Image (cartoon, rainbow, N blue to C red):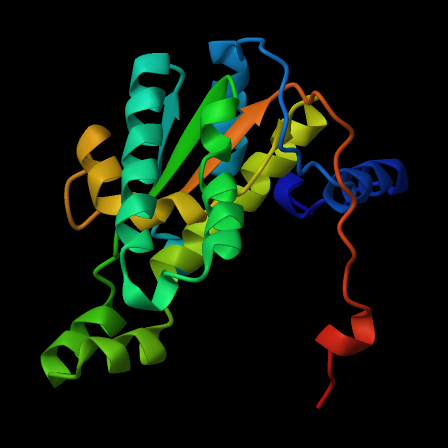
Length: 221
């Protein structure tokens, strides 16, 4: 066997599964800076994730500048104020408050990692483009491989952060202000911001999330 094919020994496998299965989802963080070498290690492991066609379409921005984070927070708040003016949301104050709190979690951590994804021009993508199908048909047939790839990297990043004693929270709610956030982060199309990950030493015990039983998520044919 080559080193890449060598199976994990039992103790390594148990340690790996313990990290993956243990909750690392936190919403409150200690006011303690995350060293650059720790950030580089987390992201370095995240880039080992599998990706569609080995496209590695993910990119990361580590944000610790409090002025930039404040500007991002203001952009998200402004967007929620705009949404509150829509007739269909006029009586949904409670739901708006919950969503807004989730969307602003990134501003409460000493580190925020912006996760970006760029569509990959694979042979299948080219075929879809040449066929003249609509964007809706394209998304159904190609299933957004860049988002799948970015999600795989996020999983590795959050698990690695947990293994290093940090907590993280995978948030997509801030993307409601995605266009303005991309401007603040100098993100140019077709690259898109797809998630924000607040990371830091946890100031609370991670919340254990109930998992669906295996029989509800696995079937055999």
